[in-house]
Length: 94
Image: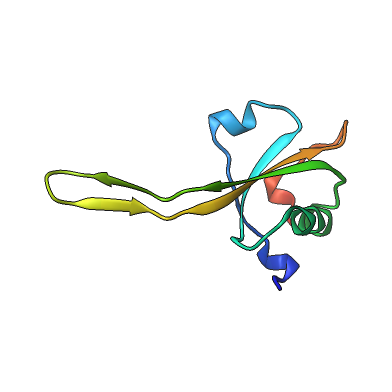
């Protein structure tokens, strides 16, 4: 079982993720599920969640130069949709 404080690993704030109002993207623990993400958002930010979509992002390899191969680790991403009229500031972590 994961502790609620360990569910949200970090926010993902890119141009693409912040372009959609009312939706916020987080990197979450590999064993997290939708119910745990909802509890974590409610506990840390005090906001009501409308829905959560979770995606597993696979690790990727690429060659950098002739022989060097770099690997990006796989991770789990959660897109959280808040109820109407609510906004989230990543700095308001309680």
